[in-house]
Length: 215
Ligand code: G
Ligand code: MN
Image (cartoon, rainbow, N blue to C red; front, side):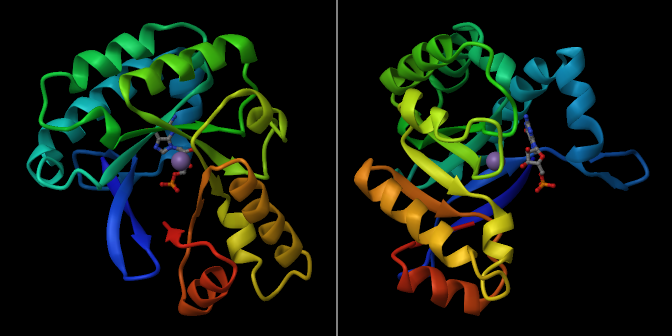
C-alpha cells in the first residue's frame, strides 16, 4: 500500500489518505498500478488483491487511526465489487474486530468503468453505508458514469479528477466545470475533494471556490 494524503486546505491538517496499490519487485523496483490493475481486473484477481490490501492497511495503520476517529482511509473498488454483496461481508469481516471504525473506511467507485447493474450497485452501496462506511465517486468528470452515477448511486462524496486540477490556469473551461461540480456537490449535500493537487496556486484557486479538501 502507498498512501496519498488528503489535506484540509483551511488548516493544512491531514484528514485521511487514499490507498494506492504498488507492486514492489524483489529488486526494489516499483511497478505502477496502470501496468497491472487492468490484468488484475480482467482475471478477477483484483478481488483477492483488494482484500489483501485492506488487511495490510488495517494491520499497518490501526495504531494511527484508532486515536483519530476523524481520519479516513480510502480504498479503490472495481466494477466487479458492485455485482454482489460479497464485498459488504468482506469489509465487515476485515474491520469488525479492528480498532478502525467503519466510519473511517471510504470506498471509492470509479466512473472510468461501466457498472453492469446500477440497481445492484445502489444496493451494495446502501449496505456498505449501513455498516458505517462512506462512498466516494472517483475520477468524476472523466468516465462512463456521467451524471447517472450521481443520480443513482447515493454516494457521499465526489472526487474531481486530476485532469481538471491540472487544467487550472491553462484551460479556459476549467473554471466553469469546477464551479459547477462544487455547486452540484453542495446541492446534493456531498463532500467534494480535489485530486492531484500539486502547487499553491491550485490550493488558492480551490479555496476561493469553496473546495477545502485536497489529495
Ligand atoms: O497511484 P496512481 O495515481 O498511479 O494510481 C492510478 C490508478 O490506479 C488509480 O486512480 C486507480 O484507478 C488505480 N489503482 C491504484 N490502486 C488501486 C487499487 O488498490 N485497486 C484498484 N481497483 N485500482 C487501483
Ligand atoms: Mn481513487
